[in-house]
Structures are given as C-alpha cells and as structure tokens.
Image 1 (cartoon, rainbow, N blue to C red):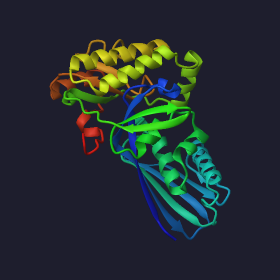
Image 2: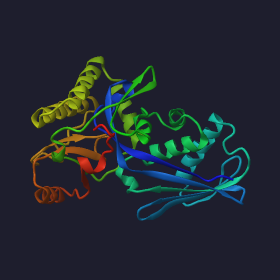
Image 3: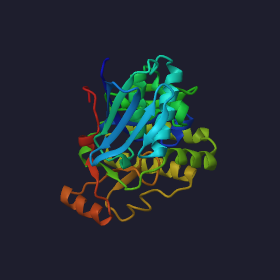
Image 4: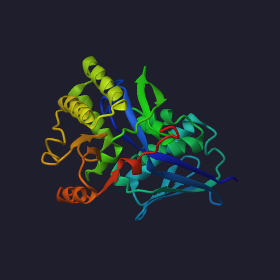
Length: 311
C-alpha cells in the first residue's frame, strides 16, 4: 500500500477577528510554522496515531478499524476529537478507511501548539487532503469557525477572506508594507479556546451590525494600501476600538501595552494568542522592554509570514 505525506501552514488573522464570522472582509496570512502528517500502511488492522511537537510526543492513540473506536490513548479528550474528525471524513468520503487496512500516522508541529497558530486547522486540512474531502465541509462538522484558517493552510501568501452566503471567498493579495521592518508578532502567552471565544461573541453581540461590517471592511482595504506608519497605527487603533466595543473587552493598548512605545493590535481571539506590534525600538531595547512585560516569544514580520512571489 502507498504512503502519504501532507503539510499545511499555520495562520494569523490580521483584520476582521470575530466579525469574519458574519461576513466581514478579513486579511489573513499563512505563516512559516505548520504541521506535517505522514501516513504509512501497517500490517495491523488498527489506526495508530502519534502527534509530536518540538519538545517531543504530546499525544498517542490507537483506533480500531473500520469504526474508529478508541483502543487506547494518552489523552482521551484529544482522541475523541480526532475520532470525530476521522468518522466525519468517512461520511464525506465512504471510501476513506474502508478497506480495513491498518495505518501508522505521525503528525508533527514545528512550533509549540500552545501558540495558537492553527494546530487544529492544519490537522483538518491534512486529514481533508488524505481523505480527499473538502476541508471546509470537514471543518463545519466539528467547528463553527469561519474557515479562514483552512484557507491559509494551503495559501501561497496573504489572502483576503470573506464568507458570502456561508461560502468562503478567497482572494490572493499583497501585504508587505514599506515599514514592515518595524512590525512584529508577539505571543501573549495564553492560548485562547476558539470555540469558547466564538460562543462568547455570539452571546454578547448576537451578530455583527451592518455599520461595523462596513467599517471593518474599509479598514481592511485601507491597511492593504497603507504606506505610512502613522496611518497604519491609526487604522489598527480604530479596528481595536470597534472590536473592543462589540466584545466588551479593553484593547491591549489600554492593558498590556499601555506604557509601551508603540502600537499593538490583537489578532484572532483576544486576550492570549499573538498580537501585531508596530514599534521603532532597536532590537535589543525591544527585547528588554518585552521581557519586562513577561513576553519572550516574538518574531519579525519578515521572518514569519509566507509571501507570494510577487510580494
């Protein structure tokens, strides 16, 4: 039997967080961190799964075929999630895992999965490719997310993402501002639960108001065409204000970065994943000031984003 290998990119959502669920135009970028999946045939009649990240194995499980019942696992909650994904993939493609042949599967993240760069979306994209099913359809069986992360999984550069009549519209774009050497992505240290954040947004906002969507769409377009750092900072602060009012949460500029020489924007689910930071600090001073805030993981814009050949 044939072996298979798949790889999907992680992601960052630059604009449109939360409101992308209701049709806002969002700017998203694939990043140089991601997840690989290697599938090898096995002489056993089971599906044996191992998931590793840079510090070693974080999850293992064995499933009986063809019903994907759990035989044993190191993490029952993670095994149930994976079980559901595989079973849904089999419904979408009845030929998937239908021959009762065993497999050894190893997934590998090249980053800490707590960073929130898409350990779930890259897994869904890889399983979708293996099962030969639409990854957006597979996502909808396990999540109420917008799907922008699935779009980033195989993107070759920045994209504009928008749900239109619940169907994803993906457009390649250029996002490489002339002041990019002053942009950083900073990990805030608290991985957010996307499902919980979506539920909280729905509870507080119901759905986005038309005027909010119009404003966020305009900001997204303006950020793409922005060439001046002062205007860029004004735009991200306005974006923070709109989202903060909707989800009833203070901006990180009022909280974490209140005394910091720069301007920050929350990315994705507010409060714990990555933030986008504009600052003119020299590298050593930046490192020192971030360290005083307890922030030790950060990347230059140019070191993490995947750009298409035209960027």
